[in-house]
Length: 257
Image (cartoon, rainbow, N blue to C red; front, top):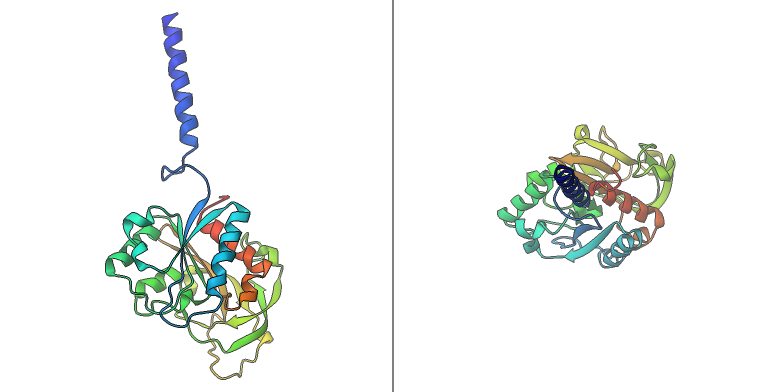
């Protein structure tokens, strides 16, 4: 009888441990909304869409229940200790941000260990002098000869991130050219339809990979999502763009995997 009671007690303890463990993720944190650190410091051109983007992004997170946003323009937030509070970082930035080497190392370790990175629009117009940043984001801004209504092709119609857009869609925005694009290690999701623009316009750069608009890649164990759209406030208010952002953020957070 005592043996039976001892076995029953052990089973109860084991069940409690399993149930308790199932409420934790691999990092030991309880499941819930992802924590996103949204960096909007600009040391170059400051887009008018940056300020309203903060409210729009917070609303996307709240409505979806997928993430919570902390806005910052302080590079001092990129310490090893502070980054422990977050699951991903998002850049809407320009220029050479005044990060110390220690802060850059903290960001690199954060991403390589499996946390996420999201870049929008001018995030590729950032850190030209820090080579590792190009390894993270996958390419650099190299001019925007078109600011007009364009057709964007959906490269991967089966993608959970952009498949909802169909084969293509039209949008009015500033269209980036990308240099130093790491095409071999990036998964292009969206690209410009060159027939929708004037390729003879001044400043146009023709490259073998065309004009990628959005892509994903890996940096160590971390997932990276970039979307070059977002110059116009109207784009941030576009439900299609908001869904692209939500899907991209959820992907880097590994929600739904």
